[in-house]
Structure formats: C-alpha cells, structure tokens
Amino acid sequence: MTALRTGNRAMFWRIVRRLLGANRGRLFVILLALGAGAAVTAALLNLQVDAKRRLTTEFRAFGPNVVISPRAPAALLSDSLFARIPDRNTLGSIAKAEFLYGVVDTSKAEEGQEHPDSNHPGTRAILVGYVHSDFGAKQVLPPALVDAEENRSFISSLRCSVGAKVASTLKLAPHDGIWLGNGAQAFSIGSDVLPSSGGPEDSQIFIYLDVAQKLLAQPGRISLIQLSVPGTPSRVQQFVDQLQPTLGDAEGRPVRQFTGAQARIYDRISNLLSYTVALVLVLTGLCVMAAMTNVAMERRNDVGLMKAIGGATRRVLRLFMVEAALLGLAGGVIGAAAGIFLSIWLGKQVFGVAARPRLIVYPVAVALTTIVAILSAYPLRRLASVRPASVFRGEA
Image 1: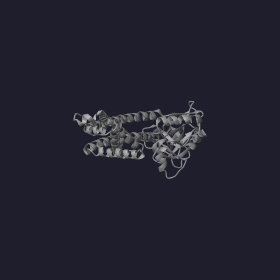
Image 2 (image 1 turned 180 degrees about the vertical axis):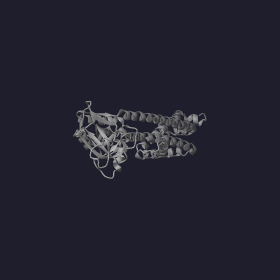
Image 3 (image 1 turned 90 degrees about the vertical axis):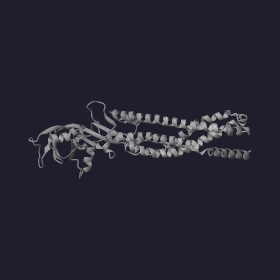
Image 4 (image 1 turned 180 degrees about the horizontal axis):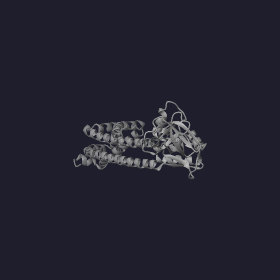
C-alpha cells in the first residue's frame, strides 16, 4: 500500500511538471501577470505600512502631542510630577519638558551696570522656566531654543534666550545682557537672541527652571508638562489613560489637532492604497482567468484520456489547482521581491525619503497572489464535465 501511494504521488507530480511545460508561451504570460500584480501589491502594501510609521515620526517633529496641566484654573503643579512620568512606552522613548510661566519686568543691561537704568526702555515679558529630558528636546521645545543651548560655549544657569519681538523692543544685540525683575528681585544675565519663528516664543524669554522658580517666588512649582509620545493616536490615548491615575490633581490631554490630523491623514492614505491593492488583484485575476479559459479548452482531450484510464474527476481537478497554486507561488515570490524594491523607489519619488522594507509585507503579498491564482483557475472546473466518449468521438 505504501509503495502504491508513493508511486501515485510520483506520477501526480510528474504530470504537474508536464502540464507546466506544455505551453511555455502561455505559462510566461500567466507568470508575467501574476508577477506584475504581486510587485504592485507588495509595493503598495509596503508603502501603506511604512506610511504609518513615517506619519508618526513626522508629526512628532511638529511638537508635543500630550499636555499635562492642573485641573483647576490658575493652579500650579509640583515639579516632582516630572520624574514620575515614564521615559518610554512600548514604541520608544518619550520626550518631555516641564515649564513655569510668569510675567517679569525686562530692560537692557549695560556692562558693569549694577541696577536697571531708567534711561533704557523696558517692557514686561513672559518668562518661561523650563527643563527637558535628554532625549528629543526639539520635540517638546522650540527648535531655535535647543540650537541656542547647543551653540553656547559654556553652560550656565545665568543665561537666557530672548524671543525676537522682545529683543527688538529692548534693542538687544546678540549676547547683550538683560535685566529681569519681579517686585524687589532683579538681576542681569547674558542672553541669546532667538530667530523669529512667527510663534508665541517670539514674545517670551526662556531661562532654566530653577532660576525662574526663584525669580517668580514659586519654589518647586511648575505650570505644565509637555510630552511627545510615539505611536498612533489610539496608542497615545491609551498611554494617557494609563498615566492618569498617577497624576493626582493634574490632567493629561492629547493635543487633538495633532493626533486627530494624524489619524485622518493616515486613514485617507490607507484607504486609497487598500482600494488600489484590491483593484490590482482583481485585474490580475481577470488576466489569469482569461489565460486559464484558453488552457481549459486546450486540455479537454487530456482530461478525457485521464478519465478514460480511471482518473477520478476530483484528482484531475486537483492537478490543475496545484498547477495554478505553483504558478501563483512562483509569480508571488518573484513579483513581491521586486515590489519591495519598487516601494523604496516610489518612497523616494513621492515622499522624498525611501520607504523602509517591512518583512511582513513579503509573505502577505505572496499569499494574496497565490490565492488570486487559485481563484482565477475557476474556468478549469469546466473540465469536470468532460466525457471521455465525447472526446474520443471528436464531439468535444
């Protein structure tokens, strides 16, 4: 019995090999259609998966996407809360910064001047005390402020960064001194003038948190914390929900204009690519089905002969299904590999950055192509109705 099964199996695969080589021109056409469909499918799926990661990364460059602030208006938070916020989630590092806001008197400071000079025009400005994490400072702070920190020749808490509008009002040149005052407290420090950005930072003065707390008489207090959390909007919301029980009197809120815009853009891109993939697979299936229809007409005599010598209809159809599956597998393996490289090129042309190959895309594209090939072999089911006698009499 075992020898009989082995012989049947060997004969089965021998017939499959003969079927594949019976008409090499048509075989090439079918493989070309399946390979092209697999290539486009793999390219679009890889772009779809990569778009999710890229949108998440690009939106983080726009600034923080989570704000932690007091529940009560005009209240302040303890700066110890900053250390309780985790530095990572399951998708990567979390950039964070804490801020203290206040209004101070400002004026230009001359070298050697011990007290503010009433002859120099002064103004009131918003003072922003800040501390940020070591990771991703530009994701939670104005990029110009981070650049000013990095370009300083020494590190000192007695130095601040002045927004462009405040510097213009005070007639500050780069590295001029500036007086900061709040009630009876006043001191002068060096300054860096930030380039104009058109944002609120143009009207603010940035200084390290400990100095701001001392000047504003708010030791150990902050106004809010900003976070840049990696992940999709749903992942960001999940992180905020998990963090909320540890915040006490504070409240965490995603920045809706960022998370909402990210979700809408990705949904549109994802839907467009999904519809395109479905259309490509349908067109590929129609091309293969047309070729399989011709195959079915050519093989009526072969099927009649197989049935005449005792071949079961189910086994005969299984031969052709296996043939279609092998064609789909071969076309998928070759086409999906080409599609991955195609997606890298498309990423450069469309987005300006090469798409990163995603391993999950390759087996999915191969599987979809194989399924399309098997479904497209439906015309071969007509061979089940072939009668050997009709074939041999020339009636079929």
